[in-house]
Structure formats: structure tokens, C-alpha cells
Amino acid sequence: MWRKEPEIIIQYGRLIDPFLIFYCQNYPNANKFGWDKWIPPTREQIDEKIALFKEEWRKYNMAKKISACLDMSFNRNVIDVYVVSGITRECSHPLIMKSGLNPKEFVVALAHELIHRILTINKIPRVVYDEKESDTTNNHVIVYAVLKKILDEELWNIAITSRSKHPSKEYARALELSEQIGPDKVIEKMITGRV
Ligand SMILES: [Zn+2]
Image 1 (cartoon, rainbow, N blue to C red):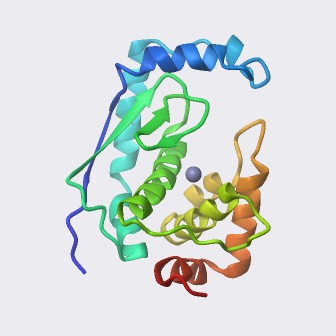
Image 2: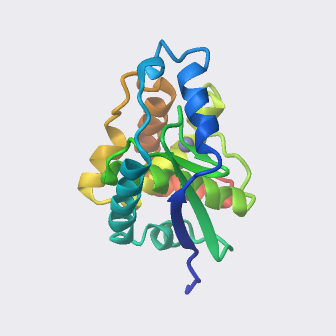
Image 3: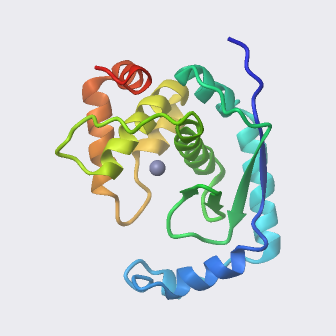
């Protein structure tokens, strides 16, 4: 089915950046995760990074792939993506990404957030894949299923290799569940609400 794809506008989050820099350096666990010693990039460095992000993002047609994979539309002409110096976790509403990623990591992380976004836009109810698992885990089973379907091998390897020094057990479990159930079944259950 033909769908108009949203224009993904990747830009510097000028107004929110000062708040996020302060937060990163001062939030209660900042020293635990090394943010207290983090030095924010200069504006020139961020602009260079944004140019690289745009160039890499352009290569993949990700919004279209996500749409086709889930058979859903974004129903938006434009989706704004704000790149900031740093953020302790990616955020899908609004879409905020940190400048510290490399361009391919950025593509994977943005695809991840857009999967959350398209499900929210389409008011898809939460699907519980394993009731013993947390909400975070259950919410990410579908993310990994779609990523598996749309990413090439290189990007998929980035998606499943945690670059974080503190990998999330919940994400790892979501990946495991997605692989166990199988990406097609995961997606089918998300769309139909049934197994
Ligand atoms: Zn997520």
C-alpha cells in the first residue's frame, strides 16, 4: 500500500540543550555513570555530527521500512528529531537523541524510537508477550522484531551489541523473547492483538 512518508527533520535542540547538559552533569546517578566528568561537545562539533547523522540516515529509507513492516502509517508530514549534547536515555516523545552516537548508531537508535512513535500514533494497545517481564521488556519485544526485519546485518549487529557500560537487562530480555517468539509472530500479535 502506498503511503506518504513523513519528512524526518534532524536538527539541533537549541532550546532544550542547556537544560539537558545541566541534568546530565547533575542528576542523582551522574557520578555512577560518569556523566559528572562528561564534557559537552562544542556547537561546531554538534553541527558536524548532525551533518553526519543526516547523511547516514538518508541512505536507508527507515521510516518507509518501519511503515511497511508494521503496515501502518505515521500520519504525519513531519517528525522533528532534536539532537542534543547529551541525554541519559533516548526519548521518543519528543524525539531527542544524543550527539555522542556514531552515525550508524544514530540510525539504529532513531529507528528504535520511530517504532515506539508509530505504535503510539496508531494507538496500538500494549501487548504483553510475557507477563512475568517488566513493561520495558514487553515494550521492546516489538522494537527488536521490527529492527530485525528492517536492518541490514551491520546495523542489526549494532542494535544487539550494547555499547553501554551498563547494559539493560530488560532490553537483553526483550531481544531474547523477540528471537524466541520469532519476529513475524511478534509483529502479528502486535497488529492483531492475538497470538
Ligand atoms: Zn525504547
